Image 1: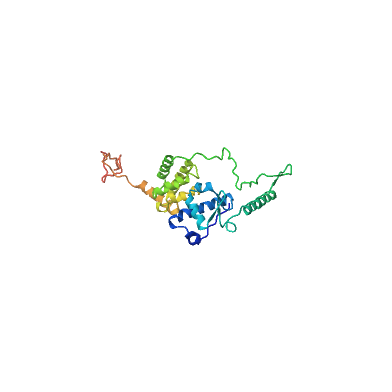
Image 2 (image 1 turned 90 degrees about the vertical axis):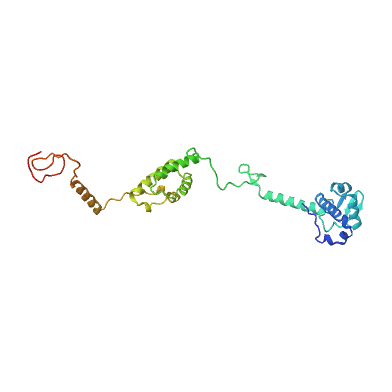
Length: 279
């Protein structure tokens, strides 16, 4: 597309200053619009009479352009006084278009696709193969519908209730909602419950991670913490405590004693100081 060129000194040119200020803007506006139209239509600066009105000009504006030296009146319209050498000429524009058309045709000829069967050239465009093919997934690979927000929150409440450390609940809910996109929601709840129970049996609460930390680390595939076996000292202490508890006498509780001949009560562990006849 050819361009109509405007000199950056147009405002101070002698031809411009010849037009009175009251008429200058309208006349120069007509001149610019007419030049753009002529460049597009390749008329080499010729403006037919009817185009003056079509370009919102007036006969007075056209006459001011003639008297100032921008245009000259010719048969059937007006002619730019200066066009050749400054503006696009029809012959040169058409010649450039022909060269560009030939260049494009040569490029297409060099890049034609050869038919593999007939071994003849075709003009169909080359379509590069997709870099990342997207095959149709099988039924097993199709994604399950995502759970609703209410289902996610309900499942989280169930899982959070079984987690031994109650901390950062809001962050944990957000992490849970992100985790259900990677793991089925029922399985995720089961993982949280299973690991939470193991943590409660094997660790003090201060060493249990917050649920959000556990979820963000995707630790549902970690090994379940094993319950440690008691040490020999712990086991012996437990046995000693059990024996002591079994050996401790039962305190009497409002027992209606029934003394035996050996001084012991038939119902409790009380013993009479003086052995006598049974009461």
